[in-house]
Image (tube, rainbow, N blue to C red):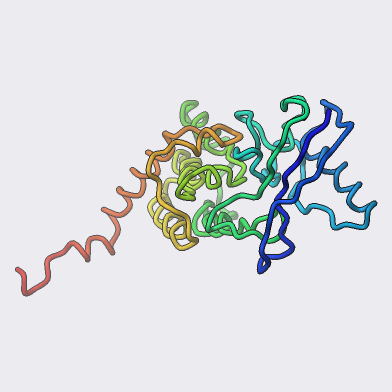
Length: 261
């Protein structure tokens, strides 16, 4: 197979980028998209040119680091698929393929196809965990969890934090990511004691990181390689509203001032 690749090249965060065209020939249909880029990089190095920088790690659809937009689709045209699981047989032979990094204000481009996704880490650091006294923590099997709750928490926990939802959203929103991380803990009994503090902290961190707001385009769940359902965004909104109504700060703001009584 052969393709004409139009790949975004940017030598640094402060540099201006542009698309550069590379023809590739003799590509096996059984190669993954990343393996095809590996072959191209070998050719570039052999010619004394700088290889194309892109993130990758497990190449098994687990880590979520293979983040790139292919022909306008995060992770490529197949639903429920990461870039590393995308194979060249999924493309028509002798066609053009455009490859670029995630496009979102919260994800500045560092180099070529690599973006800074630490904004997602800041959301997790704001509450994506359970605080426990490990010396007195009961055994996991000692806490009864309903199967429906366990299944729902597992579905939310399938999020790999790749950021495809942000890249697909016209507003650059991280609502699906944040919703999944909030829900996977709020659903389980271990996460309920901190659910109010958690959701307020994570939503505030999401806003502070520069992510946009959700306006129900639904592009996030279509781009998600783990197909996290939209209902978790509705749950996030309920969790946040409940936490805001019960928080001391909200009560103080809503309380009438003395001169108004």
